[in-house]
Image (cartoon, rainbow, N blue to C red; front, side, top):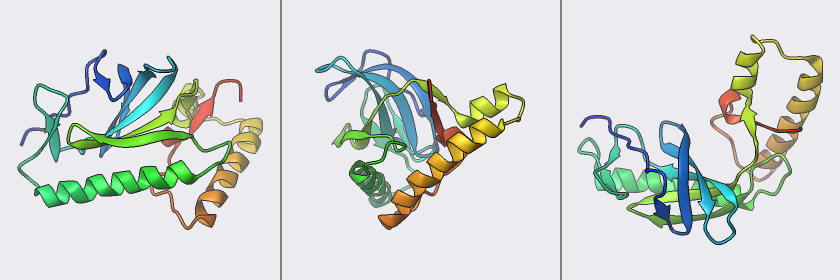
Length: 171
């Protein structure tokens, strides 16, 4: 199967969320900036669409690739949903807030609060790999504090990396 992870086009509505644009991707998901049509607030919509294992064929519906069985796809989708459920129960100022999660189009979606800013990887690149002492003393204790809560809930974060650490605008 060819690798086809077509993004949902701008204007596509999933539940009550209208896609504005794709803002990221990972091995198992595509990430969009969207608008909640009820509140007109911007949100982040994460879609379970595993690379090389699923594709979209001309519609919003996700199709399972020939390289896996429906049971394997379902197992991955359940893990994505469990991760969403676990994240939704965490309440911490340094952990993104989950609004909801749901099934649609033969896949799973996670809706999170949107916050202005950039990721730590882009910050590091922009500053030629140099991090100030102020940044280190501000950002890293906050990260460790959030991880303490995650671990106290018997959860682990398996993908901690600079591109997954969001630096809010204004601190």
